[in-house]
Amino acid sequence: MIKAGIIGGSGYAAGELVRILINHPDVELRWVHSRTVAGQRIVDVHQGLHGEVDMNFTKTIDLAGIDVLFCCRPAGKTREFIETHTIPEGLKIIDLSRDFRIQDGEHDFVYGLSELNRKSMVRGAVHVANPGCLAMAVELSLIPLAKNLLLNSDIHTTVLTGATSEGAERRPTTHYAWRNDNAVVYRPFRHPQEAEIVQTLSAMQQSFSARIHMVPVRGPFSRGIMAVSYLDCPLELTEIIRIYQDYFSDHNFTFITSKIPDLKDVVNTNKCIIHLDKIDGRLLVTAVIDNLLKGAAGNAVHTMNLLFGLSETTGLTMKSVAF
Image (cartoon, rainbow, N blue to C red; front, side, top):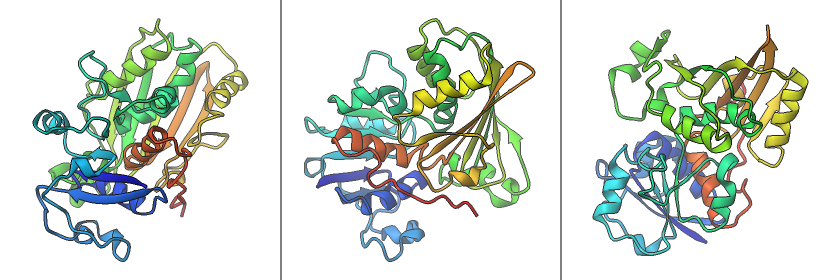
């Protein structure tokens, strides 16, 4: 059994991570650490787990007793944790913050997009940085084009995201009275996850120099992300669809559909569903994911499965809410 621990256990992504790990056939969840709710029962914070887990949040951390550590604390805190703790050699770390997503030559974290870096994770990686949820949706929308050197015009993308993308911390933009029946643009053309998108596309297409014009929008729903991107592409739609199908054919969670997808097609799953269309010579790509699963906890467990040589889908078979 893989022995797992979680730090930063009170947030939304951590709650989903607990839900997956306690039902994973090859994992024993040893402890869930939290500084803010230490001593409380996990089900008192993650109420959807009543009847499934009988554990309390702990204030102690036993790194020697686990094989993999999931870091779910805010940005900057994973780097701080590693610098202030003695990390056992060989302990696998999967970071869900944005501390190590950019490859700057100062760390050994592999960028945890399996559709790009699966070989690195299978072949001995120890530390993995989970992609950002908005970045995940945009990257999956575009990497087949990058592989085929087809990203040669400006990319325009609108990313509609649910309230849980901002985490469990209470703030005005997550308050029900503000979020319900409302939508607002935030951080247009300046979102911090743009840097990792550029990094990923450049890794696939070294000549990539196009601009990404990303406009994130806060949507009036709890979870899910829809990324709608358009760009110039000289190929016919049938050829583009073939390129996408070929690229994702040996990946387990990303699918091409002939119907424009709904958010409900993927919420509560680890799937990404992509639809392609060509209108007036422009390629339109629509991708949907669950920000807490494919964009966070589900992808982290997928990464763990790769690191430990398990079947990629183990513990990740879930039904969408659908209706």
